[in-house]
Image (cartoon, rainbow, N blue to C red; front, top):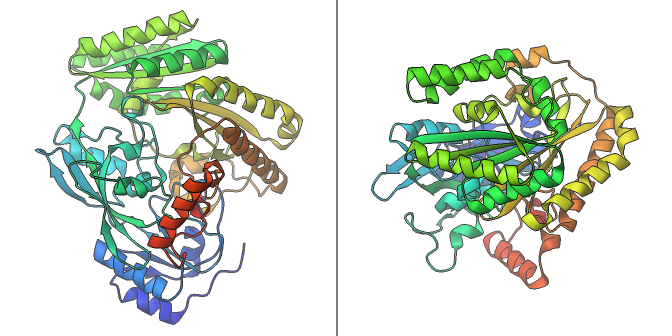
Length: 518
């Protein structure tokens, strides 16, 4: 580990004058220098503001003193979204900016502080029978909405409503000089050129989100679920794409054989039983709940043992017949491509427990985990996946020797194509953020592995090659951070426009330098 940066007493005093909490102790600086995947350069200080005024004042104090600044939401980045390349930055932990500021039932918008988590917002909106169109990532127990606007993301509602940023109507953003910028009208977007969109998906390179306004829709009243198995990847992709094109699924996702095996190994009947309680609460009426619960118990953990590739489809409707009709269309499409229906345990339990504990950031045997994803067009998704299979076959011997393995998730994104996410697992020591994130009881059950430089080196090689394969297949990305080849994908005039926007908003280059490749 690099030597920790020594914070200046003058810097700490200037930051504290904002009224925000300021951390400069060695343990805190080391902890906040990590994301899930790696450790960045040493930090000068960590600031934890409690409101927008404190945030703006502390950003101004830091940059006036010549220090770079960077925002951190829930800390769930694994692409160096907030970790730094150079020592001396001031990191802004926005976890205490977590209030739901306004729920507007008439105009159907909700405004939150950027540190509010997806799980907290869902709980608040449930009392009103409302939700946002895309209503969270699987990491929503800790992942913040401001982080979702900076990094973008998918999962809940994505099959129909697209990615996280598509639910946003307006932002308040703190710029590098401490100025607070309001990007637009809360009730509509865009109004003229899309200034809100400029700050969405920017990975914090252009400003720090202070407040976020999102669209609201009524929560669904009825649900449908189905799971399917396929014997080959081509059919798996073809059926998934057909389901997305028909617009029938609110969520449509699947696992390759390797990720299926990891899930079956990681999960247990005990965890199923705990989650079953939540699932049964989602069913309408005690008799139906008991019947659905009995089906899950009867299915046990063997319903996917013969599945090479699994696919899980969720539908919603204002009446049950509407949700059931969408599921029936999915059945017909799957049958056309040679798939077969299996017990729908996984979508039922996941939907009933949408923001579970984040124990999956380690593998079932305590291995480290690194997902690498790309959003690929339907026309190129199967060939992109085949390129990954060829990559892993090429490195199979070294991977086997070093205990490096993988599994792949896919998910459809409404109107945008297919996310493919190979996840790498390798034996290596945990970092402080991982140990803080996982449930203590779960962590105690896992082996505590030692540092493994050879496995880590191979993982980094594989990760970079995966990034390159995505680039070769014209993929887009969420969580661009310092990982994906965003600027390589821009034409010269587009790149010049991006640099001009950066120069206008951050002329000294102090806002999360290096993010987006800027």
